[in-house]
Image (cartoon, rainbow, N blue to C red; front, side, top):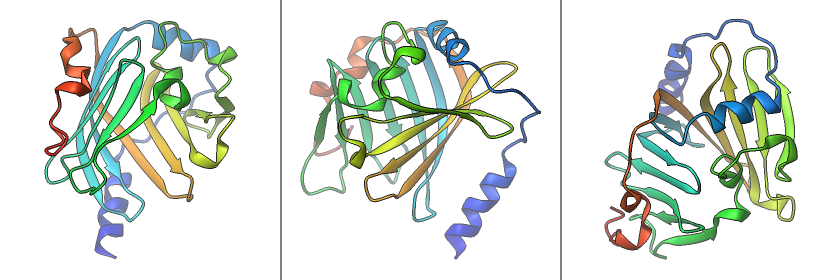
Length: 198
């Protein structure tokens, strides 16, 4: 119960967005193509109501790094055409997936074109934000990714991951910044100690 109260308190603290209209997919694509690198702090609400936090780094094309703060120590790295998940709490070691088979590929593309992306399955408006839903059309049983954009100005604000079991993880981005320089080594999973997840 306490976890749920904490999660609810966080949600209520997120500023209410002003009234807006649904963004066109072409507008969102133009926004994503306007920057090559980005970073943001994030707060994640897990399916069980617990909270996690960390940093997100993007370097297009094809690179992403999600670093979780202690005590989680999880790390997700996209680079070299693959997505690698390091979880020190797992006994099975790291997990690797082809980037092209994950919804992340549509926003990490060299040129983002959401209007013609096969993985885009829904484009909707909830009265405040524009939501783009993406999933692997060949494997819908693996779940989906809902990417949420605020408007005026357009900004990537959050996303919701729904896995194959229907469990949801919500990620809220804070202090989103673009235009910084990052070494490719930051996105090189071969340099990461699998046991430590760092």
